[in-house]
Length: 163
Image (cartoon, rainbow, N blue to C red):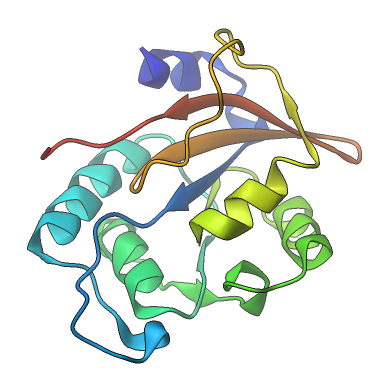
C-alpha cells in the first residue's frame, strides 16, 4: 500500500503534489470553479491521509478548486494555504520545479493536471511499479523526493475514496 511506503521513507525527503478532485461546472470563470460535494468529500479524506505524513508548507494554485482541495488539510493542521502562481494552469514548468525545490520537506502542493503532465518531463520515475504509467487521476497524490537538482516520483496514490 502506498501509505505504508510513505511512512517507511525518510520523512525529511518528501514533498507531495496533488491534483484536485471533482469540480463543479457552474462558473464560466475557470479560476472560480469550485469542488462539487463529491470532490469536497474526497478532499477531506485526502486531508486525513496527508495529515499523518505532511509537516511542511501547504501551497496551491490560485484556482478555487485547488485551494478547496488542500483547505481541509490546512484546517486540520492549523495552517493557512499559500498561493503560488507557479502551480497555476499555464505557468512555466521551470517556475513549478523551482517552487518544488524550495518548499520545506513534507510540503503539499496542489496543481492542475496539465501542469503535472509537464512535470513528468523532468521527473525520474523510481516507483516500485514503474511499468505502470504515472496516473493523472483527479484527487491523486504523487510522492516526490528531491536529491540535488533531481526530482523523483517515488510513489503515488491513484485516487482517494468516495468513488
